[in-house]
Length: 203
Length: 203
Image 1 (cartoon, each protein chain N blue to C red):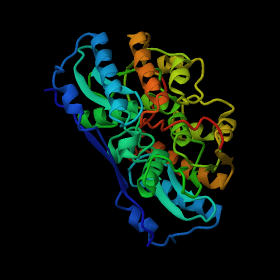
Image 2: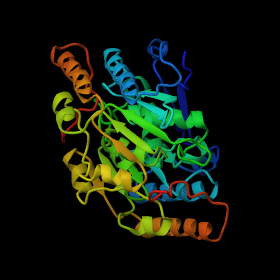
Image 3: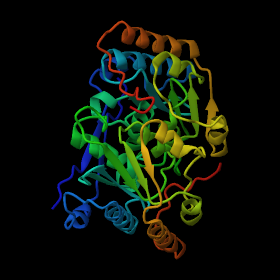
Image 4: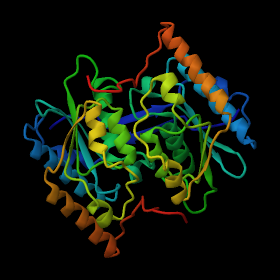
């Protein structure tokens, strides 16, 4: 019989414990939730675990933290393990199922440090979250980091809203760009930073 | 310290062994690879493990099977575990890293039983595959199954080609639709089939 691998795991890096040591169970202020995201994103690339991206799933009304995610492409070896996918998967594992908008659950929001790439755009759509909070949108992310985010329609936010997902934009936008700039500076200075997703065109 | 879940696993269902029992390591004919996809997709919804979707990663030139995936949303409780994401993640676990187009690797193709949803569209873009083989595209999938596939630009195939991913369309298209129709019939007849992704609009 043909032999195939039957399982893969997506795991947070060990350093996450350091970063969560002083984080309370409930972070009521939205900007504070984004500050946590920026901190994790910054630490993530410095540790060499993936791109400068992180995400948090929180209960929308209370700010209770349900899960955290970082871009784990390099540590897991799985290209879909972007911060949003990781945080959503871990939140679903926490709440007990594939639908974070399921009956009996509080409303959830995903907090992330830029408008999602096209993959994570879809991942958010199908996750059951009721809110998406982003630090910003626009060409700066691709310009600074050189990551290809893929084609996304100009009506991306309207498409979320049409499916019952409220979008909040421009939360600590400058702080997001500062993380991206530090990352880029390290890449340019020849530090051992892997730009893992830079295939912006054909060979 | 805040307690969060730190890992999730994506695992193929146990019945996959049955279906792979007679599959050779190399399936040189593209239609035969799609036949395998259709068979897995059909079995998957009948087993109640997720939607009627499956995918195979193969070496492009030889047809050697690298991994198989099925929609595992219901069994894993992870909404991103679509067939494409599962097959790509398992292929990357098999080949040793996040880039199926990495140096020293043969070219890989993903074979799947319809044009990917917007999430999996991105997942394919970032996976490193050099080819995408689909049974078909068009509104039939959404019409028959009621699944929301998300907004995807009319130039979806051109966007793949611009990134070095060759698209082959219309491989056993009618057979794909037959699987979707059987699924829909079971849903309509009141069988215990969970349409897990049907939130097509706001509450």
